[in-house]
Length: 602
Image 1 (cartoon, one colour):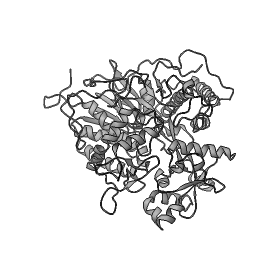
Image 2 (cartoon, one colour):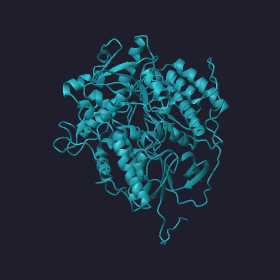
Image 3 (cartoon, rainbow, N blue to C red):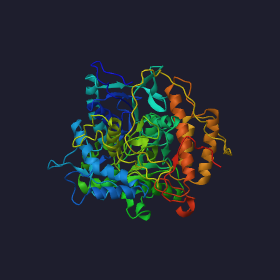
Image 4 (spheres, rainbow, N blue to C red):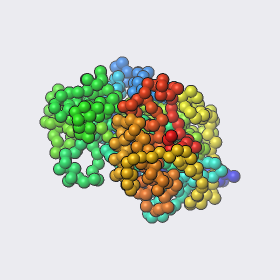
């Protein structure tokens, strides 16, 4: 029986959105506009997300694009950056529908930068063949977008259309009759629960797996761990993008700032404007590594920096970004106007980038892999949706194209709402989006010959409201690792700590990898997991203990995937790479892990 509203008609479907980045905020607003009941949970404040720190912008081919730019060119650039590993249909959807969701952002109060003629100011970034990057507030695009969406969400909350629960650490997904039926979460030292017709994970990424990251402290792989424990398939976890130019603070500034200082990403757009990379000897080195030099794809630039530092005998060192050439060419004051946030933050760190180069090094930035979904955000578990960085639609391939991440959160967040609303008279209210109610959803992004899992297709079967769901539901999971040869390590594991985990992942599964390093990481992770099984929920009301379990589980999954892919591809680089034909039957095969998989390698 479905619940009824006080007026006597069917009650609106309830969508639980977990996460307050661009995918979560935008999806919540669209669902509420369509008449759904929306509960939005975020584990910090609404602004605590990767979205807020995004500088580069949002890529889109508009109705009036830059001269020579086309949707086909955007598709080609995305496919090329993804090293041939992208799902073509997912990329087509992303690039074709981009303009719809740019209009959707504008309807929700986002104001993009304009040029002197009053047209959108379009920037050029690495690996894009034409200027197509929209910015809001120069180099503070993410903050501008997030602030506008948060204001609109708070207005919707005041109007009773969205319920926002802040500082809520979701610890598990409640299930009933084989479907996800709600979430359990920690709030003010208590364990609570909320039920709904579906849960949309929009929890972002996992930069906290590594010692140096551009991600905020909340990026602890929560959504991936929640989905895995609930039985969802995951894919492409070996592909973790490292942003090549994160500022390295001087020793005195680092000591002053302490461990709580936020990382400073030096946007790709700076190199798009003409900045170059120099080594400690003042020599420009990127042309020796790639024909596109500083404008090569992110994985190429990050790897080139790592390889060059190794060649110089300083693998833990840094290089320098010279933006003085931009200021000299564009005129005094240009950098401060174009990149106000970077200008302010570098000066706070004691560096005047108009007069001296900025010390930079690669940092963990974006996870291309995640919870496997189709084109409408549906996972392999009924009632569970995912969108944004936590999801793997196949659109990012083996390496994400710059400024495609915010766009993916928009397009596939909206499509996840479409999937949720399928079969009703409501539809998401993005401008120019025709109602799709009652129509069959598109087939899965997972092609049978490129994905190990069965393609998902057809309209979702959304559950009715479950009034008997208790606040806490416990259920049994398969044991992971499964029975098999135990991986051992000759290194001393030592006690688990987040610092130790991040150092291990950086040294053994970072920009440069090989079989020996990954094997050692697997052994050490296994030793930690044997003491504290990350698949079993911690019996604790301390959110940090849950984050630690999520990070340990995500580390095991990443290392497992990296060991399986023995050839280098995109952001996954192995110095012991074997030729694709010898490594796997299909070079671009997508590795998909299910809960039956063992995390112990033979």
